Amino acid sequence: MFSISSQVLYLVSASLAGFVTVPLFLRSRKLDAIPTVVSTNSWRSAIKNLMGASGIIQEGYNKYKNAPFKIPMLYNWIVVVSGTKLLDEVRMAPDDQLSSVEGANDFFKTAFTMGHRVANEPYHLGIIKTQLTRKLPNLCPIIEDEVSASLDDMFSLQNDEWKPVVALQASRDVVSRVFNRIFVGLPLCRNPDWLKFGNQHAIDSIVSMAKMDLFPRFMLVAIFLTSTRNHVERGVEFLGPAIMERRQSADRARGGEVVDVPDDFLQWLMENGTESAERDITQRMLNMIFVSVQGTASSLTRVVYDLAAHPEYLVPLREEVDAVVRQDGWTKVAIDKMYKIDSFLKESYRFDGVSSLVMIRKVLKDFTFSDGRVVPRGCYIAAPSYAVHHDVEFYEKPDDFDPFRYIRLHRDGDDMKQQVVSLGSNFLAFGHGKHACPGRFVAATIQKIILARIVSSYDLKLDNAPAPSKSVEFGVFIGPDPNTTILLKKRSFN
Ligand code: HEM
Ligand SMILES: *[C@@H]1O[C@H](CO)[C@@H](O)[C@H](O)[C@H]1NC(C)=O
Ligand SMILES: *[C@@H]1O[C@H](CO)[C@@H](O)[C@H](O)[C@H]1NC(C)=O
Image 1 (cartoon, protein in one colour):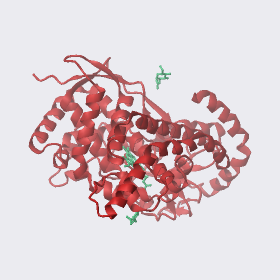
Image 2: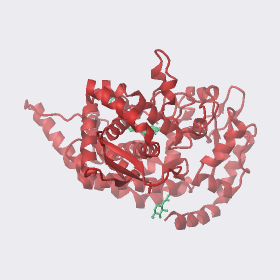
Image 3: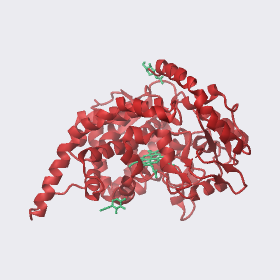
Image 4: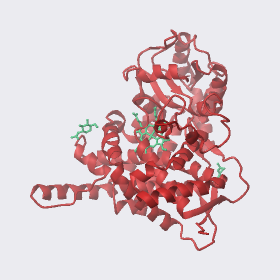
């Protein structure tokens, strides 16, 4: 599918080269002080970078680590920075100088795939940071309930039967049910048509993002209008009745009747009141499902693969889970004590990664580093997460999968710093600074519960000799091989 359309895109884009190399050239004079990786202004190399960026970023990192270097994009430059000092300068810069919202809009085309309001009035960020994150202690038992129900529905296993499971598909299925449980609640979270639609919306959005990456901005609108517009209409068919029902019950409550008020993301959006049209609320929910499910499912796929490829860690993980759950049940207290589970997840994020760049910022006003080097308005700045995660300066034997390495780093009283959700310039899986992923607490909690549930209920292994897990790259995204299959069996108690 990509191969045919990308040839066409290549021709179209190449014919537009005349328009776009002008700004590239002008900006590049100001940028002279920052070294370039890959031949400057080469059309072909720019195309190649968009298809998969990790190779070229690694090359730049090997040469210029801890100093900025620049990479040409189709019609712009991206300046890649690493090291605590430079990253601190980037994350301290004000939003009207280095913009995370506009960086995301340009890279992920949020405005076009998710709508202008979602892109430019991101009030859902506040709801993620407050209601969603603060309610995690209440949500843990609910998440566990949905995880168990999903696993039971998906894998009805006979004793001693090894069943092949397509890891990405299974991860998506579990993760989307769990997020929908805390986003829209029962019964919609188990409606297969709704789940399938959410998934299709995500896939179509990624395809549109990927295609649009090759086009200068002025062509975007026409392409978009054909692709995801009718998704919102379809979404309203599912969410509209739920929104209506909640409004009616709010009316009854005002009339003095005692009603059950749901406690989920949809409710928090409605109560916030920034938007009231069904369409707008639906669009925002679709965006929430997109940002939550994709990253979480694709990293969970790696986690499951890593466990199947290293079955020697199953028993220690299982012992930890059995012990804390026996004592505290499936509570937040128990989840917080699952240090090995946490360390395993973190190692998997480090080792595999879902993105070759994070902290993508658009420069709105010329930005000057403390050493005097300038990044002009209109360029992008980002951090090379994958390269940093594989740097021997920060990780001993970085190419070994060593899932308990963070536990060995625990010192009295500072084990919090080693957690998967804690940020730093050497662990960038969730970005860094004030725009770091606000969903990381919920994402990590859900993944910990899923991993804990898997190790306590199943044995797993690869169906052939462990081979390095393949990945699929597109732009800055690194996705797991969608075809990876693992084998699953009921846990044997012996
Ligand atoms: C394991 C799963 C996830 C990974 C690896 C991940 C990763 C990231 C990364 C790298 C960023 C960019 C940070 C930066 O620029 O410094 C980000 C931003 C974001 N993530 Fe996540 N994320 C995950 C799950 C989630 C979930 C579950 C939610 C929602 C509940 C979410 C919502 C967001 C939002 C809204 C932003 C934009 C923040 C802003 O612009 O201020 N993510 N995420
Ligand atoms: C709606 O959300 C925004 C952003 O999180 C917040 O500042 C505002 O107080 C919220 N409004 C209400 C009524 O909750
Ligand atoms: C997955 O399998 C399909 C169908 O067999 C194949 O076309 C595709 O290339 C495979 N993907 C990867 C990343 O190997």
